[in-house]
Amino acid sequence: QVQLVESGGGLVQPGGSLRLSCAASGRFLSINSMGWYRQAPGKQRELVAAITSGGMTNVADSVKRRFTISRDTAKNTVYLQMNSLQPEDTAVYYCNAAVKVVVNFLTYWGQGTQVTVSR
Image (cartoon, rainbow, N blue to C red; front, side, top):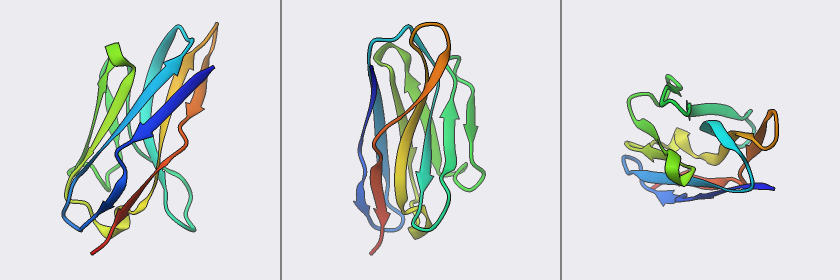
C-alpha cells in the first residue's frame, strides 16, 4: 500500500511563507509525477503545481511568481515553497502522486494539510 504524508501547513500572516512537504512510502516500483492541489471552502479542487520524475514543472498562473515546487527523487518527497502568501491562498493542500505499483501508474492522494493566511 502506498501512503502520502504531508506536513508543513499552518497559520501564517499575509506576506509570509510556508514550506509543504509530502513523502511517499510503501511498496511501489517508481513514481512519475508528484504535485500539489488545493481546495478552498465552496470551491473545486485545483492544481497548484506538479513536477515529473525528470524535473519538468507545471505551475498555476495564480501562484507562478510566488510558489516553487521541487522534488527529492531519492527520498520520494515533493516540496512546495510558498512565499508572499495571501488570504486567497487559504485552502486545504493535497499531495498527489502517480505511482507504479505493479504494471500501471495509479493516482494516490495525501490526507491534506490546512494552510490559513490571516492576520
